[in-house]
Image 1: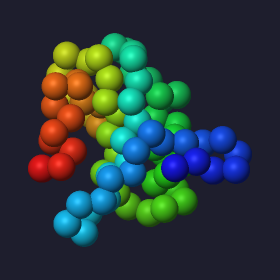
Image 2 (image 1 turned 135 degrees about the vertical axis):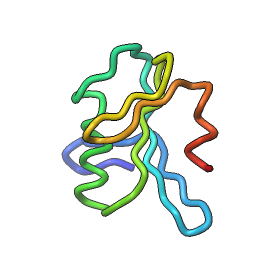
Image 3 (image 1 turned 180 degrees about the horizontal axis):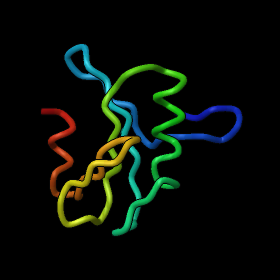
Image 4 (image 1 turned 90 degrees about the horizontal axis):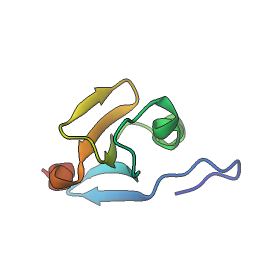
Length: 78
């Protein structure tokens, strides 16, 4: 998903009537900039799960979404 202004997310997943936007980053220290695409998706497309999959050791909650370690990616579908 990408806007004309360049905001993007890596994946939009729809499953059993639910939708999740997923961004994948190599960082182990996520910050607001890493969630920019997820925030733009939420603003334009409406409510959905917003997940940043990255190298964190455990899940971390942010205003713009949830940072998950790669090992917990399956939880996006749970």
